[in-house]
Image 1 (cartoon, rainbow, N blue to C red):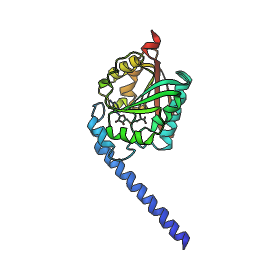
Image 2: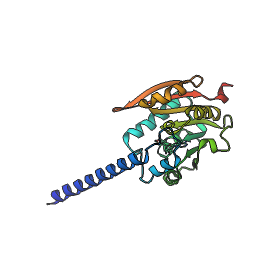
Image 3: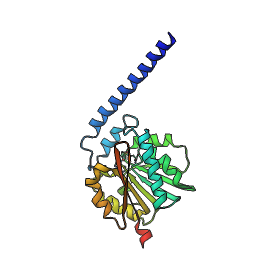
Image 4: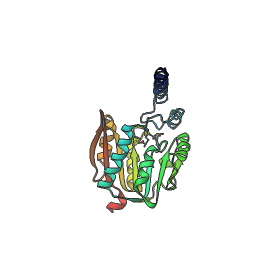
Amino acid sequence: MIRDRLKDLVTNVQLRASASELARRTWMKYAMRGVRQADAFDRLDMAYKVSDPWRMNTPRERFRFARTNRLVQEHLGERFASILEIGSGEGHQTEHLVELATPSGEVTGLEVSATAVDRAKERLADPRARFVAGDLFAQPWSSERGRFELVTACEVLYYMSDIPRTLRTMDELGGSCMLTYFAPASRICEAPAMAMPGAQKTSFAFDDTEWIAVWWRGASRRA
Ligand SMILES: C[S@@+](CC[C@H](N)C(=O)[O-])C[C@H]1O[C@@H](n2cnc3c(N)ncnc32)[C@H](O)[C@@H]1O
């Protein structure tokens, strides 16, 4: 009897989970229309009508966050006093980037969706994390050479209309720069990324998902 009830309960939970996953997918199909390489900030904000629209709270993405941190530490440095994360979403990766900050350091998450920024602020209790809603080029500091010790842009380049301009701005702002993108997006990301001075790359995978990571020293550290 109890076993039957438990079985029903588990089936109900599974049904609800798959219904909500179906709703998320359907919503994202609609919200993401015309978003690629379009600076479609309104539609990106709309994506956040569902929580965790890109399923960042999954083993696959947690693997990517940990691997990205490791690559930063292996190639760019152990700890940073100031980190800029471009496209910080709801702060899932920020939670990991904070581990790269010095005890008195700061991670600034920059995100065009105000909804995502509100959720990120709720998610992260760490006083070293702060979030700004807006576009990179609209920031008053966007052309300050070496303003941040590390600048990251992970899974975000695809939504931008001018990738080379973003990379040049990162190069100016960051002592070190780190990008990650889905391997199939190499078609649009690889040429501009590898054109950055001294750029190096590697790839890593989780099951059948492969990402490319590209990093380089920013202008302030090459001067
Ligand atoms: C796929 S999510 C990636 C989130 C996080 N970087 C990660 O890797 O887990 C992409 C995020 O970038 C944001 N975004 C897109 N274009 C942006 C831009 N020009 N400036 C800042 N954020 C942007 C989107 O709103 C979205 O939250």
